[in-house]
Image (cartoon, rainbow, N blue to C red; front, side, top):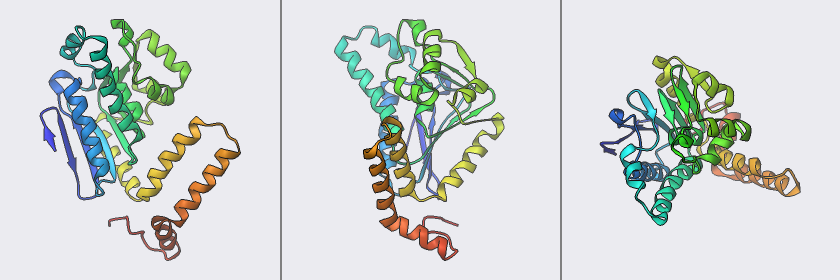
Length: 263
């Protein structure tokens, strides 16, 4: 699938790479790009041949957040129109965060506002050394409301409060310290590192990885009690009894690759 602002490609191993393709606008997004990215993520989720999704960008910036022309239009919107717009962005973030397939963000440049939200929604985030980050909304008299649950989950409430209210720019080393990104690499090694990680993911059971994502979402939000303990026991029992679980165990005992690994 390819449109001017978005390019999506799937290789023979089932790795899908979605590339934001508005380098002249620092990959800023408007309602059109938000809709296209949301629909493409949903399409890749439905595609059984897709195993891993990488989110990348072309040009100097990963994403500068909201497009200025879009923001000018929003200035004249009614509350209902603004709510509809905000719900579109909220749907994108929810789709990216909850997609059952593993996601990797490749942050090659500046990530501003909603761009930080995209990074926070991915399971794994890799950053080049020269990337930078900023949650700049308060400079415009706005708030980063829609992305706030994902940013807070990534870096914690304390750091979120600081960077939301100061709107200060921070570098890749600070993003790593905060937990927003998992690894910082030289810019010319970013794609290679993404490929290495995606190869690791391809060796894991697709159902198991989807189940792990759902498991983490559940245990992170709930208190450790008898209900949660019972829920975790049920989850492992279900996966053990699944076709994938049986295949994985059989392959291990028989010293062969499981059937989801393509060699």
